[in-house]
Image (tube, rainbow, N blue to C red; front, side):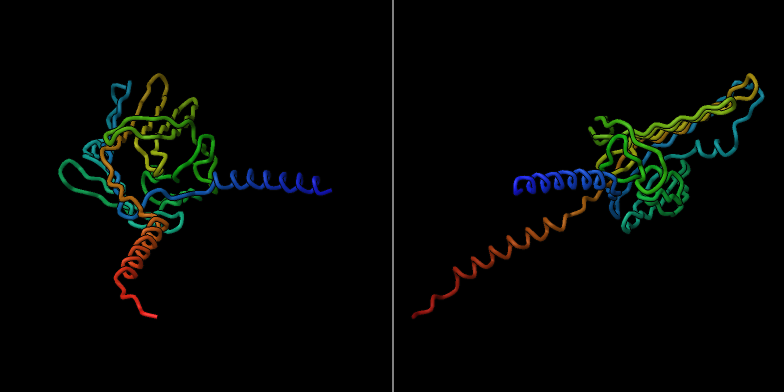
Length: 239
């Protein structure tokens, strides 16, 4: 009877660990902190096989972009308040503020998909509580800041009149995008028009978050050292 009970307890523990592991893997963890800034080189190209087609004025303006930035203003639970800043070659800037929730997929800022949750795994949903998009493989890739472990997102849709492809490589540790590529192809009769937007990480200013546990451990060690020093310096009392 006792042996049977032990087997049941062990089985329950194993199942509990498996369930906890599955749930934990899907929890949205924010990997960026207030003050982080991610700077990207920005490129947009447009071409058409139609000789009479004209480049849209909006694309001409965007092509004068010098760089874009995502500035982390604040973090509250899984919601991140971000400034999206576009700096043009003439020095002017446009700033838009909005929130991104890395759990529910609430995105209220341009290119809000450039920030997702940290430490996601392949085949998991990008947003645990929203959407169906999943992540692909992890790999080591080299960028301006060195070699980074990335996690890959790739999506494509095709129709008789329009094709779209989105590809993003994220820094797995922070959830910040390192490389973004969006290509759309419009087909009208025999003519094909292609627009491509590419963003490549140029630099990032990541302020590491000092863990509370490390702080507390350091405080305890410091207190112990002070206590020892005080004891050594205290005069001995006679019996």
